[in-house]
Amino acid sequence: MILKEKFILSEINKEHVMDMLRDRYRQRKYKMKAKYYNPEATYQQNIRNKPPSVPEDQWKWLVEYFGSEVFQGMSSRNKKNRSLQTMAHTTGSKSYERLRKGKGLFNKDFFELTHRKKNGDWVDTSSR
Image (cartoon, rainbow, N blue to C red):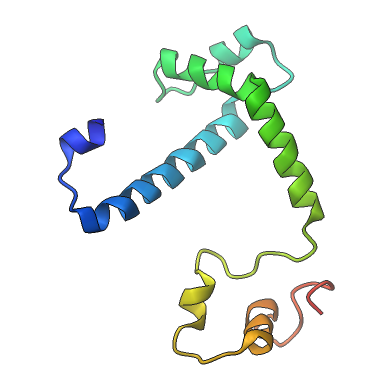
């Protein structure tokens, strides 16, 4: 709501901008959790380890969220899913569609493009 009050977004760009902001917010929460939140510490210890740029009420909410059953369940599920992945992600921030555009590559050729190093070696044994 605050963003809508402060900025004028055309309907064409609105969805894209909101997606970017959601992604940046998620990344920021991840970095704060990694740097300031200790799952082994008590609630009070985590509250005292507040990032300087975050208001106290917002940090309390995040600490409660990080310790919630919903978040813990989601975290466990994501860890399990990551452990099942056999091939490394190789394209960075570029989408497959962006990489494929104008190249006219079929699936096999595209797979090789995205899973070989510049020197021609495979990026990992699963890709080979």
